[in-house]
Length: 113
Length: 114
Image (cartoon, rainbow over all chains, first blue to last red; front, side, top):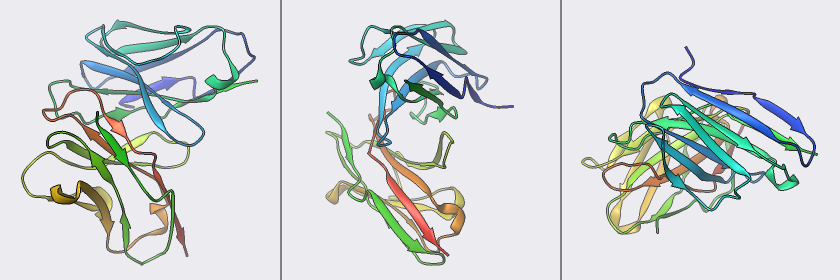
C-alpha cells in the first residue's frame, strides 16, 4: 500500500564503488523527483522526470545518472562514490498539472566510507 | 529566484504550550506555500498548503498557517503542542500555478518537553 517506496533504505559502501537506489510510486502521478538531504537536513532537488522525460537537472555531478523506465519508476545510479555523497536521498512524486504537492518516500540513507 | 528562510533552527516548547514556527519566502508573484513535517527516519509528510483564497489555512494534526503577503511570511501555528509533534518542520515555496520545482527552507527542529 506504500505510495512512494524506495529501496534500499540503508546503504553503506566504500569510496569508488557504484550503487543504485530504486523508487516506485503507485499514485498514478506523472512526475517523479530525486532530492538530496545533507547532514544539516537541507533538501535540494537533483532531478525530475515527467512521463519518463528529464525536465529538471540541477547542478549535479555527472556521476549521478537517473533513469525512468516508466512513469511509475525512477532510479538513481551513482558512479565512483565519494565521501561527500553521503546523505539521505528522497524520491518524491506528484502530478505536474496539480498544485505542486509532493509525496515523499521514506528516504535512502547512503553512507560512503 | 525563489527562496525560503526559516530563522529558527531549533525550538523547544513544553507539552501543552502554543507553538509558532516562522517562515519567510522570496518570490516574484504569489507563490504556492507548503509546510511539511519529517519525523526521525521518515520521509516528509504534508501538513498544509496555501494556493489562494483564505489566508488562514488549516492542516492535519491541528496545525494552521497564515499567509501574510505584506510580510512575505507563512508561519505555522498550533495552539497546544503534543509530545508526538517533536520532529523537523520544513517550509517550502513553489511557483504559481503549481509545477515541479519546490524550494525548501533549512528546517526547524522542534523538541517538546514533557
